[in-house]
Image 1 (cartoon, rainbow, N blue to C red):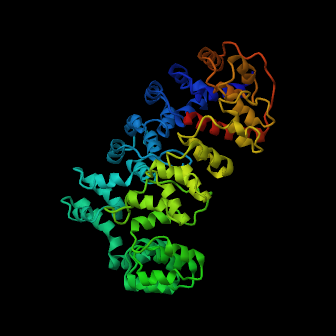
Image 2 (tube, rainbow, N blue to C red):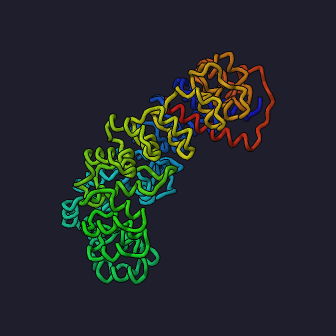
Image 3 (tube, one colour):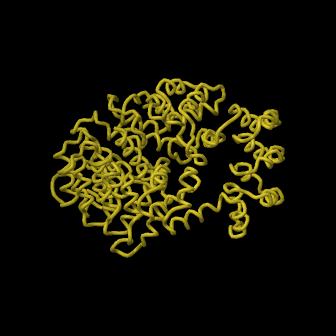
Length: 532
């Protein structure tokens, strides 16, 4: 039996939803190769397996666990003070491959990482470098910065200044007057962006990054004129600190994108809004009519995250919209999202569909919306999206398939009707449906055969020849119908070179294309496991 088949058995068992803890713990053996690492990083794990991985002498195992986004993050707390700085850094940097959704870390883990005095015994990283990984990981919610603004430790009050414009005015004032000189200095340094004179003084130091300043900072009259002279007006048109007197000039700018940005702003007066609603460009007119005057910056941000993105948008999904980044005390209310859900404007219904707090009744209504983007956003972002909608979007929009398979609500059944679909990836989805009476283990496409091998309707006897075929071995090993004693027997053979192996051995070699298909299928299989 070839090593490649052994590797497939190991990977399949690692993601078998019926594998008990004693089976999974065996995969932490170095002889299991990358199967144990993939398991520690890529699936939910029983407590006993998490405990074994946390205590494992190999930092490689602990590093893999540090990037797990399926285990309760509270269980990963010991890794925040792991003796290895590399392990801490992997926990701080978050899941690999930049998933659309990043789960925030619990406050106690954040505090441990931020308060660390060293970078671990291995000396490979400094505490500052690990904190840098954490700061860019999207794992720190804005609520954490607000909660530590009055923390007893000055080091944490200093951290609160990192998201200066997300703090309330009262919190900013308190930090500027903090009893600790280090906190005051940090607050004063962060406050420069709200002082037009300091912004003007610091502008030359930003060089080619002046667009950041023009788009986010308070602008002096001289900087406003410089924007117009340099032609860098688009950032200024979106800047919440742009002076009102500049908006009329921006609203009549020859660039339609600039006019549209002004039209969407919440601080544009009714006369200018009325003018922009008559703009010759439809996109500008749409931005101007999306919301009745007056509007809030929180509502503007919610609309801005939706408008113009298209049905295949896979932008990162941030925290649910409850508060404004500019004015934290005021955010879009549930009533505002509900009014968007029944709006005649499709863009506003897309906004409502993107908010996970929308009521079940309105979610059901939007699931039947005539606008495809409304239905797609609901499927990808709302926890109560109907199962049939999740499957429909999977079939029609390949760009969203990986994210849909990661959703806990993605249905395990109800997919058998797709078994004759021309797209192999869709047939593979159907092939794993437990309600399918005859899984297509002989499908012409290897990925479909692999998915069919995971179908729990197969008997243990039917799995034996599939375990022997390199094209289906991994799927068969991940099949929950595989008896636990058989799992142990396969592990005995792979790890110790003992026990029996399937008798119907077929010597099949895989092509690079087939290996690529198998890689994508393994990802789908793991996601299907997580959906169970």
